[in-house]
Image (cartoon, rainbow, N blue to C red; front, top):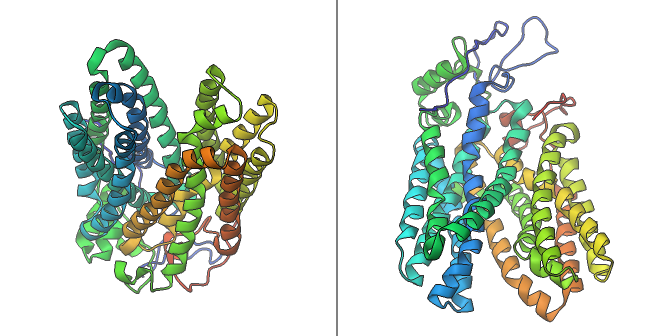
Length: 483
């Protein structure tokens, strides 16, 4: 069984004073280090990152495979436009509900158990779709599947955040978004193969096929330890020390865990406390990032067709845009520590917004220019995409991290669902030029919000980045790392 095993290294730090949250290098007062935040990137961290990113992979897979399957389902069941829309939207609505529920559950009951339990739910719902008869039950199963997928986001990202060294935290969390596009690409390939080989029941095999990667991810996650930060926040000091010994070896205890915000912030108090502004920032920038992207991604063929790229050119263009979105995320991963979070977010919004603005102003431009502008948007928006998972996990303390990530994800999905629903109406009633101008306006509003509120958390420990009213020195430029 392929489990996450702790790394085979021991901490060889300098002698330290026993004081929770502080690690003092006695030989040099100029250097402060911590055996968790400054640990080397180990095999344990890499495996945890891969297994944690299974949620975004399944998200991209589930949302994409239904589009391929719908061609056959609608013909066999004589579905109306409303029924097709409900089936397609049910997973997105489920993710909205599941993300908040998963965040609350992971803060209350821990990360370890839920890290595999939500995968079991995904497997069960995927298999059940093979035997479904009737629109209502398919909608119900897609809704439940979406809830399980959505729940995995705050669970997996919280666990990854609380184990990742600060130097690698941004790239590791940002890589989650890249896996969404990998899942989407895999779904299109699997769907096309099954459509050609599985006959009239091809759509059943397509929808059930999500169970296979879910089983593999679930098995791989078995044996993942609980977050020692969460255990400590619940007063389970002995268990936290056991995990630290298992993962980091002798010499690392809860005394080495940097102290986080002393005040417990419950979910109900989250919006009324100083964290309300952070929640507003995350929700707004996340919404501004995903609304145009979901719209462009979901309706790329229609949009490219409206821009006079018809037939095979539209399909090729749609496939190219999918690849370029993934390329943009990879480029952003390489820049998140070089540039810092705040500059990367602002630049991503500004330049991708300008690409959409030019598309709106010149919808009749030659095809080559249209494709260049779409390519520019797809690549440049990558910065805001990866920071959707970096910022929420860095800006909230351990006891509410899962709830905050889940709430922000849920609120942003509301905007994404509304935006996606309105795109075809806008194309019909307002035209492609105005539609692109609206998308540009939303994106550039994200730049304004980021300029006003985006903090810089590069190089900070979780206690520093999550602390309210805490004065911290500006971090030194991060070292160049490979991802």
